[in-house]
Image (cartoon, rainbow, N blue to C red):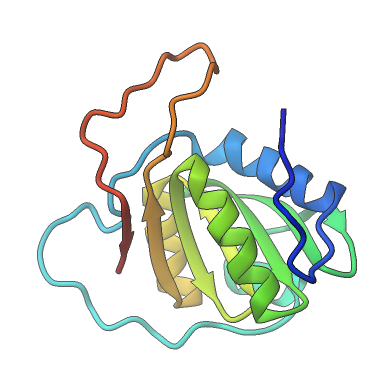
Amino acid sequence: MAIQPESRGVRHGGATALVLAGLLLLAGCNAEPADGGGGERPTPEPAATGTLEQLARKASCDPNVQTDAAELRQANCTTDEGRYVLTTFATDRGLREWINEAKDYGGSYLVGRQWVAVGDPDVVAALRGRLGGTVETASPHHSGDSGGGGSEDGHSGHHKS
């Protein structure tokens, strides 16, 4: 059951719940750094900008649009590297509020200006080469009842790279 946080001046509705459901399906509970944790990282290219379709094109994705709302647009993408969810936002604030809520579920996020891509760490790392941006990872704050049991062991908190 999803619980909506207190409204902070931004309209949250079914679109947010739908995006979070997509996040859960694709991101799982993996909290490893998207770069594999080894060696020095190259300086990332500046983050790409544009519409959902423009970003998808840069990422070599034929977007399967799932949500088309005023606050955000979301598409499922599949490339040679794997599956991910690409979401664009009407405002920077909307993006940051969405990420802050989504991080409670763990996962790997590639974040640009008014967009985020969510997927497995290897997929996010490959997308970073095409779209630029910043990788953010998070461990789930609770283990839930999804059948896998889950564990808080090794909880590493939030990371930015």
